[in-house]
Length: 323
Image (tube, rainbow, N blue to C red; front, side, top):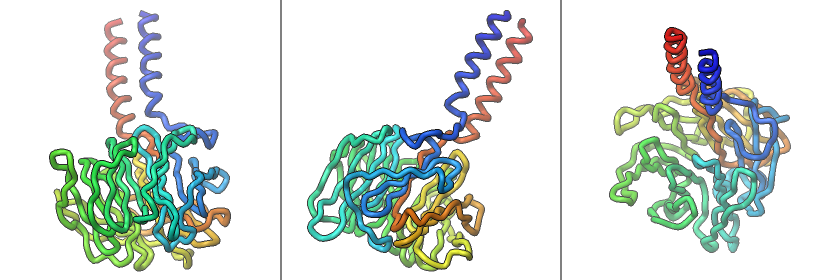
């Protein structure tokens, strides 16, 4: 029975490994818990926990995007479930627009271009689909960047919810598209009355968050079935008086949102939890300017580890009784 218990302990330890959050030691390859922010002319800041200025590594992607934080050309960033990073590029008249797909070791897997228009903006990747917001609609690709569908409209950012619905952000509203018989179809406007919105994200409960530069705040809309109520406003810290809010991303493992506040000379990374009404500053960097959208590589959610521990604890007790 001693051998049986040793075997059980080994199995328990190996089973828990995927749920243990370990601080990344090296910037590459990509790892859970890291934040990726597009900035400058063609740089990606890779920020590891605990998200301080000493935890930042940058790498160039070889493709350009708008250098001003008020412009909406390129610099969209998304991660899929397999750890691939997708970045939109393109800036200025006459420059190619497109997407670059990057593997978790930092190597470029694939690049697509679509000519000199439309403007490629925010991007989302989930469930084998990659959606890109543009000034003439949403382009939907598979994970290999083969075009599947184009939706009309002038959009700034996109996001998928856990049900696979696609949400597209216009400057003043959020539209929803549902997957019907393999294609996305317009399902109505779920949020309206926004002022100057630039980015959207969801929390683990399906609530919708919109970065709205009108008032420099994040607006939270609570899901109620198929509808949303609100908003509740989440403000920047009072110590921040300059720059603009831009990208937003959610880290389910710590139930926390991260938001970019940026100008040409400085960028702050802000954080808040779903019940907060004010953001807190994680760090402020003068090495990162004109930051844009961001993506968070999610860690395992704590609830999953708690449930697994409870189940394995019960199994250990049963084995001990029998021995």
